[in-house]
Image (cartoon, rainbow, N blue to C red; front, side):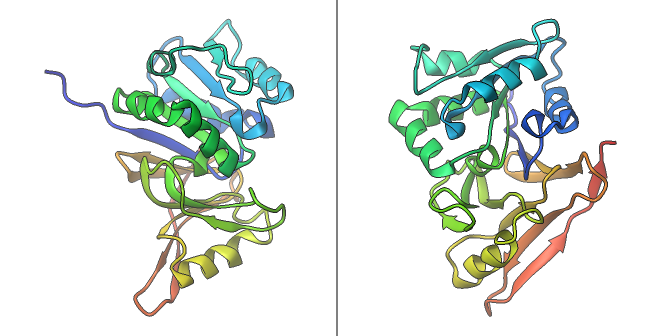
Length: 237
């Protein structure tokens, strides 16, 4: 019997093709080890926006990739488990984390993604597309400009995730407040253009496509004090 495949998740604070950043995308693609990767884009968090879909096909052209899109607002794929399982990389865009999770569960996509992860399909995404893989996250799903605690993720990775850590004013203080109050578990926070690569739920490394982008491990002590540890970040440029 073959040994079980490792779960691999690339969680970007922000970046990728929707932010004119091919470097983090290439990092995720290279993890597949495929000569012509099969890449599926799931734009649920952005309401299946046509502009996001066009940008995806521009970034993952047919000359180099077998690219496909899974729309849920106008769903055409009957067997979600088969569709997800035949990919090398599943890429999720940013947008509304809460709506993404609700839609995925309604369609049973959460179960299909779990099966794909068990089979070794690499999971990646930015912002909401990173939040979703964790147990919990900070999100502006409920009101723009805020960073609310959402303890409702898929739990493929233990702990919490916070994107856009330096770029959005509310993220850092809100995360510290939520951790101190026990509303979120310990976890990771990433600036735009930084990402954490997790294997079987454990940090493999932090990477960045901009030299000033940072990633952090943020945790709560027994007395409620919040500690922010800057991770060693490997520059991809």
